[in-house]
Length: 410
Image 1: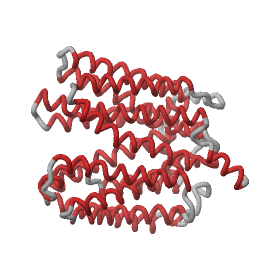
Image 2 (image 1 turned 90 degrees about the vertical axis):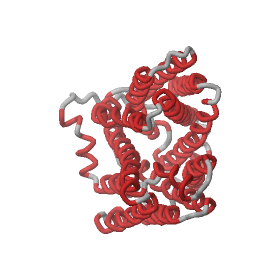
Image 3 (image 1 turned 180 degrees about the vertical axis):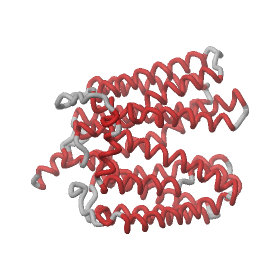
């Protein structure tokens, strides 16, 4: 494709009706999910007074994804992905509406809240991998990487705004947060129903063990994809420090709750800034080298944060950490979409989503267990060192990933 033609495509990206609908749907769903997560945490703790139940909420959110991965991918490759996302958002809107009703009427109980969380998480298990699998259907192949970067920006903005809106809204009552979240899900549903894409009918392969496991088989046979997904999995698993931010805010930086809010926002701000840069300028130069450099920066920023006793330095380190992580996210997502056949994209995206969820959830568990055994600072510093070691090891183990010059070359 000529440079001038590519430039025209890029400039009109957000003005494309189908991509605009996709962007609105993804932002609305992510914003609603973040608000509900904050409100549910506060509400369950108010009902029980037991921190253990906060961990059980995380388990209730992650377990459906783990259990449904094989089914999710198969469904996404057999049926209209727009309809799958629309059905999921309708279910999430109903669950959020139910939470709003019981909360506003004073009838909320642990059982009701947990049931709603499990239902919403099961719907999200189908929605999360199916949404990104729509990108190749709404933008030309030449600008998939930039579309992915813009979608990442929308998701990160929702991760910044969602907790803030959820926290502020909870002052009015949990029911109002859930009601607003239900409205966001309905907005996403409307955007999905309005989206129009050119697509060929999905291939209806018979449901067998081979087709269910085809996503794993495909990734295992593509070393570029296998290397990218496992690199991100282990890097985030070792380098994740989010779960320990309350400890750093209170006991190490000796600041109040406002500091925790700033620390939680900093990585998302860095990720948004980087995603906007990548969305505007794309990934230039050697993509493989850029990926590994980003992971080295991620590990180094983690170490600096772990050793910092200054709120300013900690915020800067976390902002850089978030920007570096955004590079990894865009590279991984773009490689999956550009190097996976359309009829396999749902299954591969489901595995990608599982890897991301596993690294985030288990990363927080790893950080918490290490902090309990060695202290918060060693847990974070050793995690950053581990990320650098993993990146160096993967450079040796996957030389084709290190030598990757373009997202389209894989």
